[in-house]
Amino acid sequence: PSTISPNADFITDESILSYELTDDADVSVKIYRNITDTTPVRIVHTTKSVLKGGQTATWDGKDDSGVVLPDGPYQAVVTAFDLKTSESAKANAPVIIDLTAPVRPTVDNGDVTVNKAAQIISGQAEPGLTATVFTNGVAEPVSVTVDKTTSRYTHTLTLNEGANLITVTAKDTGGNVSRTTGARVVFTTDTPNSVTPKFPDTSPRPTAFVVI
Image 1 (cartoon, one colour):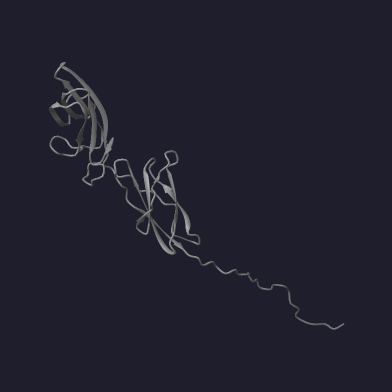
Image 2: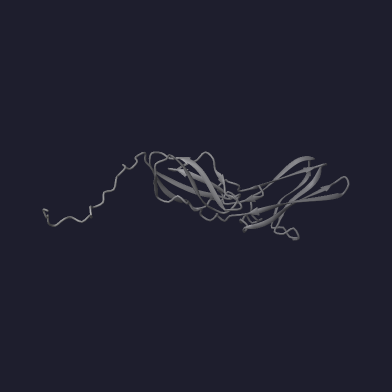
């Protein structure tokens, strides 16, 4: 992936760099903070006589001392030296380190009681992220993408009868997950009885009778 989060959670911890050689060559793969830098922050490998064809190299987001590098953009540079022609060629690809968890999403549906099982859960989160809705701790089958224009997400789910704990998390492209936001939604099939309001009789009452 172009974005990694090397936090040892086994989710996008590494970037797999793919390249192809048209002939056998000596190859170096180095990571730079900026494409114009002359000193790499990491030498992934330098290998002699790599066979032509498709090849890969893996970077774990660390420097040569094994320390995870700070958040930000980096450049992976592959240099191939052809022993036959004494020519070299370079190719580069951007890689972003992102260890920062997204902002916790909001949930519009507060603590409410409803009489329909199908309910739309909505709220706000960082645009472009993936929002996952959980019902009583179980993730819904489909996650939703937060709209890049409105920063909103919506998801229709089916409630269980009784109290339902709805929680939402947001995940970015680096695999970082936000803190959880929750709401309690009670689904009941009971409907209130129809009640006809009664008002007191305020019409004037006679205080004496006169016979004519």
